[in-house]
Image (cartoon, helix red, strand yellow):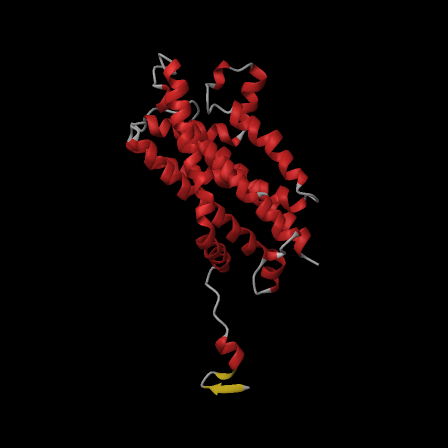
Length: 273
């Protein structure tokens, strides 16, 4: 059935079809937000309560045995920014592995989205935006709690959130690319075992990287997490970072850009028939 208007013939189906946002990636983001509205309670423990328990356990428990702190800073205050960055990394990679793999392999969400008037870049960017939302909101709650613990000493702590956002993109984008090309979810578990755990242990979260042997120290410098930890620690303590702020930001941005390109290539290989 066709109705004529001043501008020409318009079908009823076209009139009833909801218009896409000017930025189609926002439609993809809205899809994930609607689902998250029903499941957010399940992620509270992993992304919020566990880090708080870590602050209490490490900051007050282990910190009680570190009499002089680290570099003259109370151990609780020193470890908090590392935990914020480390938690952001773990949430980002957790949201970028099995959810991405399942959208290709099991529930086929990506195939349905590209069948709609969405480009592959929109599908990728919209999902990355949701991961960014997840990490930044959980990090904001974490930052609020540690502020109540008295572990924040500068208004520069507000810069933690954009730093965490950039760190999220730096690790989530390449992980999207990795999850798009592996043939089994076994490889996702290997990513946590051989990348996430070593980064969490040796990137300056729990102790200064200067105490590591030279080889491990340079491994720490090569990881995106160390750069995020150094920036977050400088922000919450109100001190200068170990490296230049510009160098940190450019390094993380390079990871994010390269990861996005690799992810886009992987998505195209899987979704273009």
